[in-house]
Length: 116
Length: 301
Image 1 (cartoon, rainbow over the protein chains, first blue to last red):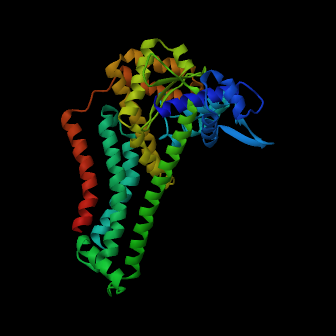
Image 2 (cartoon, helix red, strand yellow):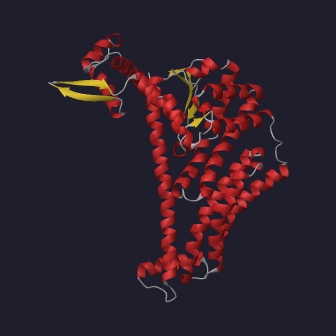
Image 3 (cartoon, chains in turn brown, cyan):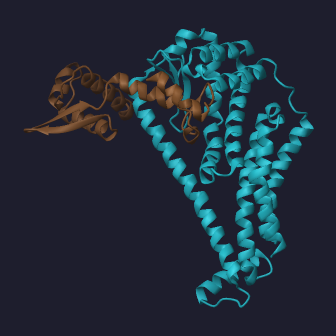
């Protein structure tokens, strides 16, 4: 199996685990939650490290273990993507191409209010 | 002052302001979006080269009769520290201005490119975690949100994205029309067509012509994608998709958005006659000539 798609799929699984609980969790908790996959601890740590670098997960030390938590809920992240997709600011228009063209500057704020 | 340099300076200023403004309100590009986009690229490139070239030609004049002859002499003068007697303050200022202009253009282009790539990477990272691949269409991803949005994330690892709201609001045929439109953006790399105008709009936001150019290019890119989409679906499917999404999207609450949408619907349903082939050829030749003028002026003048 290719390594990159596998990592992407693992990232989704680990994020689902973090989203399913409010409390911060350790790498071992994640490993146990995903016991069916029989992941090595190093693999879980690698995936958590990748998610931390992407700014999706924060890590804090308590005692001897590191605790991980997601920086935002799933819904908040979806809202971020939707804002990106609808916020047709001219200086960002090269980043995404939308089906419904661009929206004039003075009316973007109204649009954002509707989304929030 | 040197006639060639002065002519180029005027030429650059004309392209950046009155010519850009005029083209932005012209109607013919709606009949030939590809020609319109080529002409815009040529105006941007020619305008930049003309302004840059005028400074270089005037600044290098003391070193030789033509720019290609002057460059080696100027390099030798810099290396030897000996300046020709005719070298005045005006020539130095012209060279410094040309250098600053070039650095500013390139700097802003790099900054905008880096920011764009960063935005896209962050967006793609989140998308890959949150969106579900849609089995019906390879490469398309569905985002679970009721507001209908369809967009694409351009780049080497591009993504086509539909929100769940789109799938609720549209018939399968209309979804296909939306996807055809987004695929045209991806395949023809419209993001790269738009990028320099975003950058140059940011370089000189006080020049109205640059801002007009940015908006006109964005509109032409949409027309082009609509043209490609209507070639692989039907016109009514595409307008149906635009209407349903326009009515359901929060953007429909804003009036000028609705006006722009009406224009787009009109153009799809009653497409203006394409420009005659001869005129289209002239547009392309004109675009090439625009870029050739400053290049030849620097090489010969």
